[in-house]
Each structure stands twice: as structure tokens, then as C-alpha cells.
Amino acid sequence: MASRFWAKLERSEFCTPFSISDRHPTYSSSTMSTLPITKRGAEKLKEELHRLKTVDRPAVINAIAEARAHFAQQMTAVVEP
Image 1 (cartoon, rainbow, N blue to C red):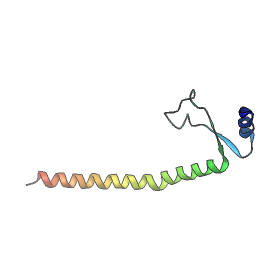
Image 2: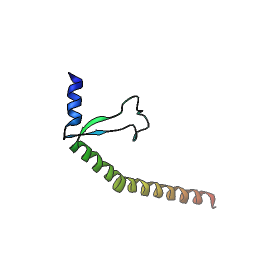
Image 3: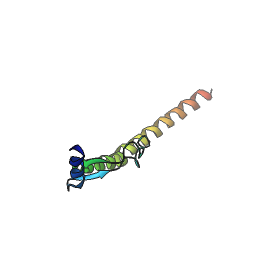
Image 4: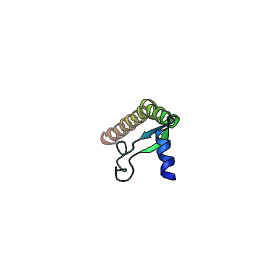
């Protein structure tokens, strides 16, 4: 009964199979091949990925660069008498 439900759900226009084995090193194809996901869920994941790549990643890169510069400045201050 449950397998018929999932088969029907996968064929539904509201769901898209989402393969995580290609995107996540922890999951292998023997563990889990696809997850049923709604189209809205897929859209939300794409939006989150876009935000992470365009907003959060550059902010982290800038923070790391600032920390490295601060560390280098502190190290040169200690070395010079």
C-alpha cells in the first residue's frame, strides 16, 4: 500500500524526484537514491542555494579576509621592536 502511494506521488505533477547522492558526499546511491519533494520545496531549496552563494558566501569570504589582515597586522606589530 505504501509503495503504491510513493509511486503515485513520484508521478504527480506536484513532485520532482530530488537526487541527493550527487550533491552530498555522505549519501550514497545504495543508501538513498531520490527523495520525493514538492515543486515549492525544490524552489525554496534553489532560492536558499542562490542566497548562500550570492550573499552569505561573499560575506564569509570578506570576514575571513578581514581576520587574516588583522592577524597579519598583529604579527608585524609583534615582530617590529
